[in-house]
Image (tube, rainbow, N blue to C red; front, side, top):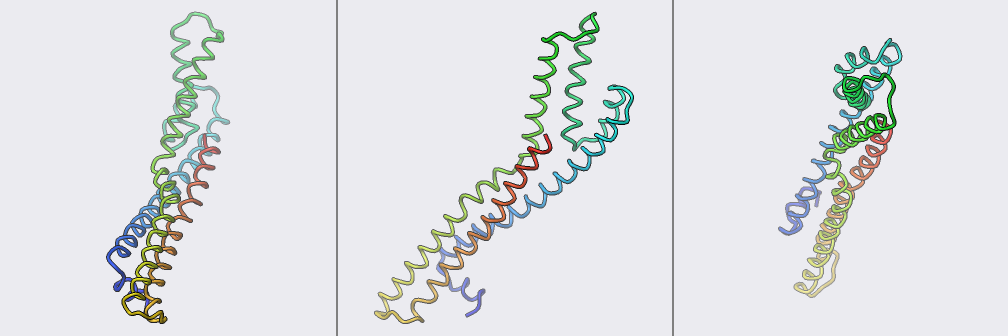
Length: 200
């Protein structure tokens, strides 16, 4: 009996479990692809922004150049700080900054940082959910497969390999697919979490 035949002959409950796990797995891989692309763009644009920042003669020049780097967390942080600084300078006559002014800039940077973290964390909660839930869904499929095996033994009144094997195989498939969905999701989640810490 091959893998396809095994799934086709599985009970309706096991089929539902496998479909749920397949959904989690496919959607997780789609998110992993999307997030990988997002972080790659963010890193590339942040590097370009830092290059411009080092070469620019003044902050206004940096601010103008930063508008091009929509995916860069560093550019967004700079824009927020520069906007607050420009507002403070416009509102006061003195050229020097007070501790209150610096606190206002700091609050603006923290707010911008939180906004960037939220943007970069978008859809990552699904990866966390996949990593924590799918092993238990797979375990449910495993338990159900074993129950089917015992029911088969009871009906046939024999414990032959032919009676037991299909249910055990269903159980193993559910467990394997649960782990297949969970492991990449957990690895990707932790990897992207580290990327966020490095980016912002």
